[in-house]
Image (cartoon, rainbow, N blue to C red; front, top):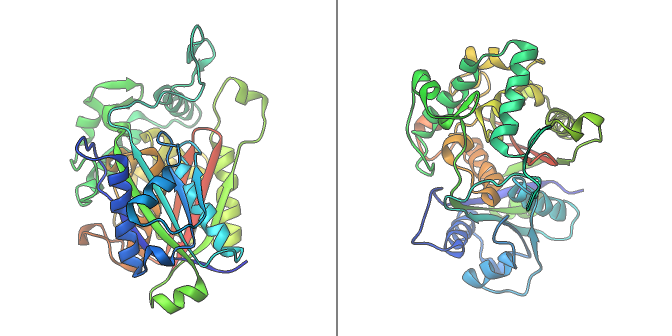
Length: 379
């Protein structure tokens, strides 16, 4: 397998854009990624396009915006991991020697559309059942409450995750929301599903992101500052009787992280910056443990000690994360790669958000409760 690099990234601001179409958003991200890579659409040999809600030939329609070139187009749908799956497929194709230059793009226009749960319930079947719920706010509230019961984690510790990420977003011009909140304001906001208040839940919205993936050989012809993709891993859950009535997110991410570290020849202590899937504040704290940043039950300690904040030992979600940057589903995983590439190049769009001397980065996305992707990037 060949070494793989990212040589160009492009991303729109996330938000709600009633004056733009999903194709407008995708075109903007693609054009910016091509310009960043200093290549033409004619140089691209294949396209992997991700969108959860605009699924019908989205890649082909996007190519019509920037130039049809007869190349293969693969359209990807994989829950919240849709965009990161498109990136992984692009990386795999280049690593296998099938193509030298590939475009991966993720795009979504959700507006105020809600995340409707994962059960596909309809008619007389409700996602709110006697064994729990399949609505995302309820599920991640359950996971947080279970963590509180088992390890003594407090609502204040979960809320500090939101305080951190909202503070980071102030320095991100592409973030959907750019407002800092105090711990008291987060805890006092409207309750969505205890312990997650409104400011501890990610918003839905619109946005797009794109990356140009190349082989290392091709990269050396095009740039002197390559960012290598040293691990691209995907996992799905293992059967367990408990999974029939209680969602379990730990083993899938822990397995993906273990495989990614082994593939990259690195460990969690080598990471300089992380973008992880903080769909709810409870999720981020649990994923500290799932990514092996600390032992079971110690996630609260990391947030209390400021180790995952800008200036801390391992900054997490310096973009503002899903909680502030937003979560237009198909774009999310690709946007993580954009942020990590900027960080590793030392080119964060604002100086205040730049992690000093970043050389190793990890991106993590969980798609529903059935898929996890992890990418590790280095310079």
